[in-house]
Image 1 (cartoon, one colour):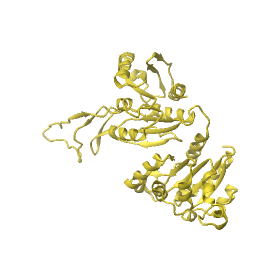
Image 2: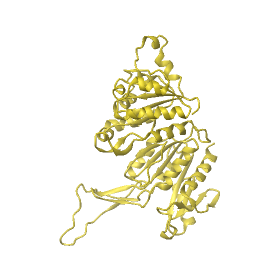
Image 3: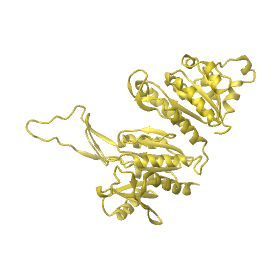
Image 4: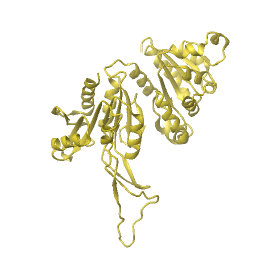
Length: 396
């Protein structure tokens, strides 16, 4: 980050109290931080403390006579290497989504052609509200990179999504943005984890998947400089930092999110998507019958995400699928690649004896149009880095 100029917009949420620590760490990494403090943000941190830590003037007013004599908000918005919004409140995200420019922060965001990263922070109900989710999609489509939010306890005492990413996670995302690598400027989509297909409010159908390999792959691609959109089901492993996280539950939700993210340069489908769902989801728990009569569940096929994207009008240059097999590994994987229409299949043997399912290592076989490439057993992060390098070789 040496010499990089970062405009830090601090808006009015309780997480603004983490801004001083973020400024300190950005500065320690060589960045020059230019703070912009909203009126509501100043209710949580003072301009004096922010100025002292940033060793810079704190910009607060849109109509400042000295700054605006030279159209200061325009110059300020275009002179930085990155605009970082921490915290990004529901209100500021709404302004970004709809082009509202009624203060310095929102005007900067509307007037800039500089890359923007935001770290949302709000109550779980505000985060889950349809309006916020619509605004989130809009600002992502406009090119903003979103860091978090995390799931956890809120300052208000509630628990859920909306807790701002930790300072270390934000710092890692910024470092990743400035990192020079072969995939800089490339956008790669990665799916991961299982999907949960509801039967009733307490039961669901799922595949066994921790999400470890998909998470490792997203991390490895980010390390090479890629912009990574990470679409994950309810996995056991936390999502990697420095990537755009899209959380889903069902296969249908995953397909919708994936299609909305197109076009991308490459797509890697590591998720263990359930093949079937029940045709009718019960809104109440299915009770045992005293007569011993068992419930009847009728199944229907889920959408085939890999095949859909492999044949999509906006098909990525490279489409990679995963195949978890228990027999005839190479033969079944070859058939799957041809049937789905993808470029590569990464296959592994998930029988219990291998210990791959839920374990730290993986043994994969990569199959493409040129043949079969068997890799040795190695930690999942090493598999991910080797696969990321292979992907880079196609995209650069």
